[in-house]
Image 1 (cartoon, rainbow, N blue to C red):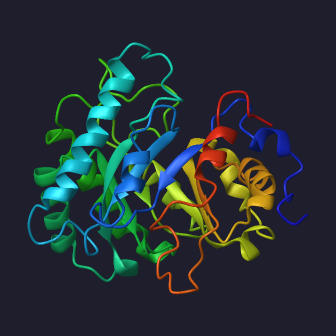
Image 2: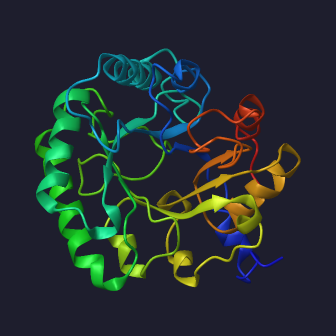
Image 3: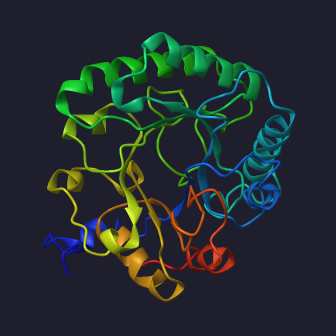
Length: 293
């Protein structure tokens, strides 16, 4: 198949690397209480979830979002410091990321930093998801400036209780932390950008789109130089009967973080990632321990 473009498919699986979820952004907690509650259920292999209120942090603190953020933070604390802290891969409680809309490079730096400050001050986020990130080489300096500044902001504005005694999250729980003690920075590119973007953040979303495109997609050769935890794939419209194939593609292409759903952008659904897939329990089970290729 087309996604088998590298002769070294064994290396792309990442060996025993554990797949986990990255949630692009559920609907508002008031409209999607079940979705947000599922993120804190023990046994959910969550790497991170994005908080997005009207394209950013909103105009003022939202009580429903404050509650959802607190529950996710408490679940992570219980996972890392509870009765079974060594089971960090299967523990609920991934990191919470604030959504910053780059508008493909058109948003002013000052506006983005103001949104970042609000996310930190109000919701105590662990890191940031940079949505609609540009992908061209010419935009790379501006993206590097932004991620470097965000990393510094996270380091100096870190809030206790989000990692282990070394200042890092539990082993195997997702992408590394950019800039030492800073929380995860994820670039929501949605395609393979210029290779220099890989050094600008902790993780790149290198595919975001429909199953019809994903099943025939190809991976950029330069991604083989990086481990799976550096890449994420978001795929909508994945039928239940093709879940195994979708997970094989993710592993072969070297993605460590995924979000697959059978929802699509049709039938009145503007955002296919806003709700749980109908097979949520099944995919959680399939990503569990021992499910490695």
